[in-house]
Amino acid sequence: MQRAQVERDLGLRRARVVTLSTVGSGVLATLLLAGAGLWAEPDPRWVVAGAVGIVVFVVAQCGALYAAITPWLAGSTRRRLLVAFAVAAVLSVPLVGPVGAPQWSTWGFLGASVIGSVPMLPRWEIALPAVVLTVAAAGGVAAATGAPVRGQVVIVVVVGLSVAAWNALQLWLWGLLVAAQRGRAAQGRLAATEERLRFARDVHDLLGHSLSVIALKAELASRLAATDAGRASSEAAEVQRLAASALVELREVVHGYRAVDLGDQIAAVEQVLRSSGIRCAVALPPDDVPSEIARQFVAVLREASTNVLRHSRAAWCTIEISQDEDEVRMSMTNDGAEGASPDRHSFGLRGLAERLAEAGGTLRHRIDDGVFRLDVTVRTRP
Image (cartoon, rainbow, N blue to C red; front, side, top):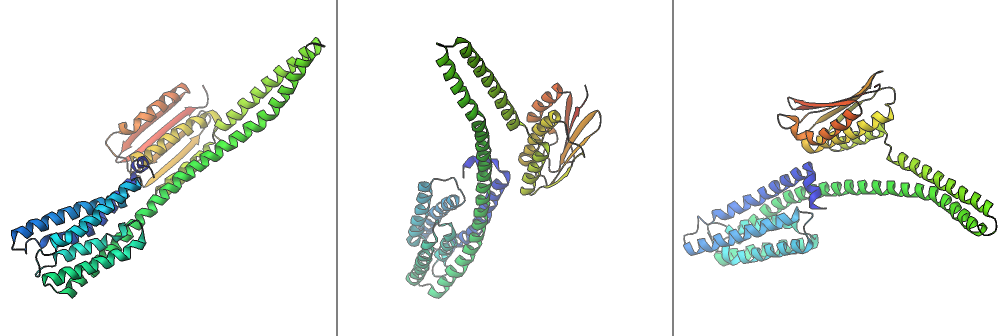
């Protein structure tokens, strides 16, 4: 996934922040317990060594966490960050191991943090060796410093596996969100590709036959030019007529390709809003909206739905279209509007308002108590 996609998707950005906060909170708790061992160490030299070891460990672990929740990160950068974390974990054994011992299991909490970081590893087959090595290191540190080996191992295993289970859940949910976003992007690209293929097929079917006939007629006219000028002139005129006819048909195909159906567009917008967790209610008139007005409404609908997704925290949205003999009206309303004025929404809508004015229509918008309302009116009669 590209970084720009995550930055454009407000919901995904928030989910990334939540994942970072929840995973970081469990890791931070174990690191604070490890830091408490500095207060239990009477030797200032070991206090300095322990502080350096913990700081290096924390920085490297933050890098590993960043790599785990950053889908656009290059593979080489991700590997370097994970290797740096492994090196920092190894260096912490001699630097932090003796700190606070045997009264406080300082490195035991660092070891628990290492096990808690196992879900950040890219491959699960290296998780078990990492856990075994960490538990062995905890037992070795306890034995070397005179601390209870069993107690330190229990701290590392119980606390570490608890943090690992919590982190695994959060990273799994984050992975599901990233996969869903990738699926939505791929679905959009697939739909655009299918539409291009359909259009290319229509153009091929139209022009293939017409150009073949034109080529044959032009060749015949060229052959007749030297022997039968009158018939050659007739064939040349037929070529001109066929070319003009093909051009008309091509324009009709392109017009049909560009034409949009208001009902289909509203259904698409409704589906997108609901997939984003926004309740959507739609009210349509019993009769079809004139095609020229429908095109104007579609442009406004696209801009307004984009504003709902990008510039609001909407929980609901309503779209209503009504018409009478003199005019057709469309209103779109949503909650969760931010800011005291609609100016932040008005840049794209301002251009649409100018286009509507040329077609005899009006566009107005306002915010009342966090509810954004957009009203469009287009007259059906001059």
